[in-house]
Length: 564
Image (tube, rainbow, N blue to C red; front, top):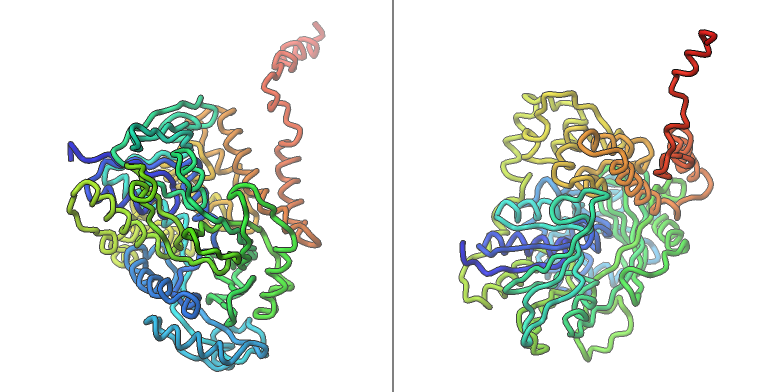
């Protein structure tokens, strides 16, 4: 479309990428900018639950109905990102019978399939749960890979003509005659794929319309545009265990509270969470007691957690929004619904809309709603197709699986690669060269790493979120230098070193809250490997003023050995 309206989407989380995809599929000229990697904010810091809606069936039935609807959609369009684990709401002896019945009734009122299991049936399904439980409710919860889903949306948007710019921070919102006309963006290393140690640039991106999809950061973009957006960020702590102690999503069947869910995710299990309002979505305390609370409380449901090893802790920030005048003081009482803020109607500022609140599971619905709104601004009639057209990797996956043997994919490694890549597996895994496993913990091969580098430049954290390499038990200790090695020879040594440092630091920051007792052993192993084997803690080349002339060239020694 030659004269298509140009839309700038700010924010590369699930909602922003979903909006970019929907807009591009409806013919808009779309640019998406994200100040970090895709999933840099809330999307990359969640426990990976695909909601059935059961968690909201008592407290927020509108959200519960949206969740079960989108749960079914995502199973269809993103099959390579979803694992249908099912979920259990487990009642312990001290939990209320009345609430159990209220939860069951709520699920049925919201069209959420719900089945009551006895204690024996629950134990048969999940042997690791405590022996003194009363009963449970089975619902269609699942696990979903937020990184893979977000990237798939971005890839789809690109295939429909969108421009996706990561590490591109909005530093100003351009306003002319009470109308937003674009933004000033600072590229970390220049536009396009990121290459470390490349000078940054500043770009003015003009647009016919701007969508603020920055979630918990929406208020900061609002400040740049001169409008007030009352986002109330709420932090939540999560803990990653070293293996899957359970294969089903485990929920505590009681009114909302801290530490009441375990989500099996790939090779791990994620414990969650807390809910505490914070002033700043970037700066807030990450406290040890929150990690201890996860293990202590959830051990009442799954006792083996007390003896298990944690490998990482992390915190996310919910983008909660409270309409003016509500006066809610408890963040757990703020609705999980989403809101579309048309700043022309609300603030007299044309050309920009913000979308706030909401949940990961309903990202596609949110994207559809705001794309409908943008279409209305330009009088464009174009149907939404995002609920029907599969995301890249999910097209015709069953046919590919039938042909796995033809590509030598009978091994567990091949199966895991195919599950991650979906219908892209043939294109990525068919290679003329050797394809060794570079990340043993997550069974990631060189071909997948090279495919991700093709998409991401030298950004190894972007490679990580595309492949899961360095996200297993060793947290990069055994594989992040192999990932960096794949950048050579296309990139010079200083660039490779900078990329490796960034990835290693990102892996370390999540481990520091899990260091006690035997937990220290893996961290010490990583330190020894990198500090002594590769001399990374005393590497003279880091000074970048290395005096190579001071080294023995061999010539003089040869002379000496000849007695000259």
